[in-house]
Image (cartoon, rainbow, N blue to C red; front, side, top):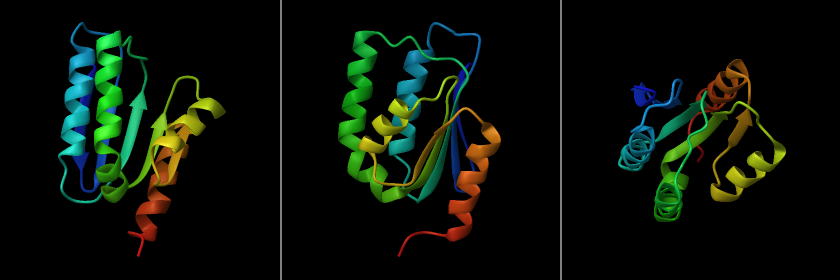
Length: 126
């Protein structure tokens, strides 16, 4: 399984690995639904080791998910770190335009974990 979501304490980790499998896009969309069904506040770590080749159908479904869950994510996600193969300032801006919670896009797992750790130690916003 190359796309998986797991939870440890208050951290949800969405991992997208290699090698690609034919049902990765469906697993990815299912993982997004699981994230949006969470009822308690959480921190999100997205580790993208393999860019998904989303079809137009999957891209539209992803965009619908972003729009439908924006308020819920802003309320429950306390911070997110996205590890990408080739992080760019453009990706950082794009993700920040979607959400209001603290967010980091990086290529470095240690940096991502340190970012989330800092926000976890700070506790939930008042």
